[in-house]
Image (tube, rainbow over all chains, first blue to last red; front, side, top):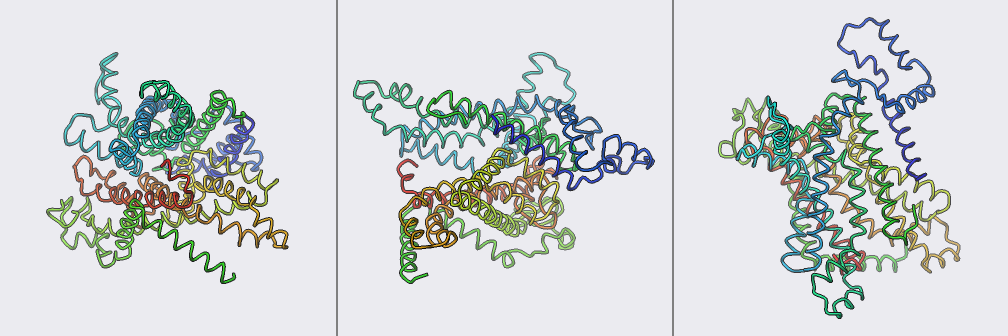
Length: 313
Length: 297
């Protein structure tokens, strides 16, 4: 708990100094190329506290951050926080669904692979997931996009709703799901491997235990031994992994969102890099870090709740 | 170093190689890697560097968006450059960045881990706190933010990857140092009057180096994939071809809508092959360094 707070403070300080290193004149860059009188710029600089000492600026930064004021985006000229809030739902929907799907499918794959260790099933699952794990996720997205959207034309090439569509209700939802299919498939395939490998090695560790021999000696069917006795004891690391990965839901799909023009936080990050739109990057980085810190804390708490032998960290 | 110790170490290296040779997975990985290292080294023989220059490509009369059928072996891009030349020369940057960034990662991680584990006490507490910070901060956003702030060059990318990915190495090395420190030969050396640095160099380091090597091999894929992602997001060195940059340019210039598969398939396959090769080598080394793993993996 205290550790998480300290980490958050570290991120805040780090964020401040990192962006002070380059961004010496944010007001100047905000109005670059526009005919704004020097006096107006100076007024703005003092309004944002930029003419003060570093210490005073840091306090100003803390106060503004606490009020969720991250400045104005260079690209859209809108407040950074408004831009971020507008992009959150798209990312949570896409990456959230992919995270759940990959956790479920990946875990099942890992259970099958471990239970049938060294058979063709195991080899297929293990090498298949390793291949998906070893390629850049956005490249997988590019291939799926060309194959299923450009060549076959089964899916739209990008975005979240069809252009010019004013459908509402269910029709709109189906349109969005239609757009979401390929990016979600990409992310699910890319994240699967981690779950499969962790589940597999965790289950293999459990499989030598005596209580499984006992369960078999009682005459229980193989499926029952697996699902009731082995898997529950092997799932602990998987639960932790899932909790930690949920912290990455917000920041997990930067390049994939860019490939599919999915209007979420990832695409916002990719667009901000091109600027570079430093206030936007700063706000996004702060949000991404906070999400990870919060979910790490939750993972620790769940872990000690599920396995009381673990002291709370 | 006494000759006895030398002999023993050479024997260990020989044993590791023998075990490695027996692993099919490890040898396949090594063979694939060798092919790509040769490709990178032989780049000047395989493709003219001038082919990367759009002015030269135009003067040569290369077709625009030429398919492999029109312009061998891998076609041309939106500004008539040979994709094969980009692949060959790009392999250099991707491999170099992957290896150099990993070296930096391992260096920072090992020094932190060894100091933390060996010295202990307050230094350990402080170093582990910092390690935890870097472990928690989301890796890719941190790398993006650093790279945006520092500017686009190969050296900055190496620095960014090194600075963001060392914490897991530090933890692993620290844990191993803590176990080695308990062994009798360390007490013996200490009671014979050996200094701290001597113990680290002659007793701790040889016993953690296998682990460090295995960890380094497994860290290369992460470095290469990070370089690729950063380059794809437009943070790569603008003056040099790399596989990630090829993918970026293909994407930005509409290779996908044109179905110009020859533009974006080779670079991705190259990354996949190299990453898989390092993973296979790393898993094999890990099994040799830590035989308890071989039972389950």
